[in-house]
Image: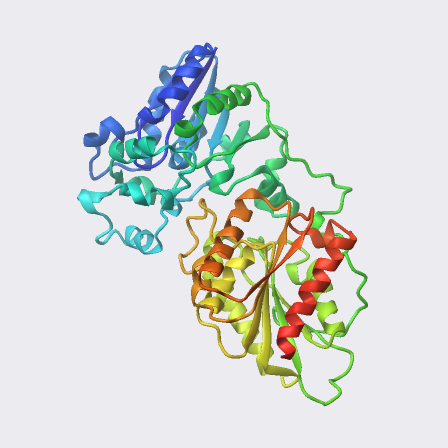
Length: 506
């Protein structure tokens, strides 16, 4: 007999699991949908001292009362914090942890990162005027739930019920750090990823492939994954599928992420074009790929600054400016008479966009100050999640910025990227870009969660009549420059480079 302990996210209670619980019981399982202290129908039980530790003890009491041989703990959103805290103290009782559209919090982490508003997060940390309702955070209104996670798949009546039944969240549950001994890390785990909320198996495999040590644990054979094509509340939008996935997870099924040591990671494979070496100068975090000779008229060169994505862990080697794709782009534009600039900005975590933006601004200043560069002719070219860094420049384009380019970009924070400041929304910033030329390279086989942001950006650009050129890569994937050495992929790169350089020479 398997027992499932189900723990939901912020502002909710055990009631959200009703349909899933019914289906699991119909399959012969024991089910314990938990309403934590201060949540759901227990809202009035919250006091000024209700915190994460309170919720951990709630779950310990449930675990100790369960007689089933196998206990599977399921944490959704915030629920994964008390789930991990309790499982860490009763590891001998737990058969598997299921992260249902939930992160991978570690010892010392706070659930505060789930709060979508930076200003509110800062107030909560200071505990001064932190929240209304005597130390509790009011739930979002019906029209604001999407800011806490995608509501895709929820019929209007269900979304209304979610909003009506939501209760204030005790502040201490979000601000108290999670305490783990390490015992929970030895337990089998399953990640259930909701693609409409910005997660996918492809994204996990991409993070593992980058060599980020934080994600190497995901290659453990005891770790499995499933995808659900819905938003952040799958128990309300896809109850049947959730129940099926939980039963399969308990049985040890699911996709495994593996890394073949002998196989070269995708981002370290050769650039799709054979571009001869060019002189390269390194200044701090910035590399300059230089043309072989000055312009015929002796004028300074224009420059193209290539901005990598991420997050990239600081220990990853080689760093992005030495990845074949960026070296290839730098050399390519240098061969055509422009300075190709690559840099290592410090986007090591989703909360680092502000710091990465500062690094980019510093690099641009350095490049424009170089006497070999024409300070009035610079283009910025963004890749993948680096696309969010284009927002500042689109919002108020300086006169020297002749073009913004973006290749397989993320152009709006994904729904589960709560720690990203709202300032980094190119899909909004494009409305004030005026007639600044924008070149977007779009891959046909883009990850669904990223493709949505590109379409949102293009729709906004169309509404404001922005100057956008779209270059499509048929059958292209994210990161195609090192994985798809095809004629159509090479043509797309050639066309994009010529378009950007054309804007620089006008």
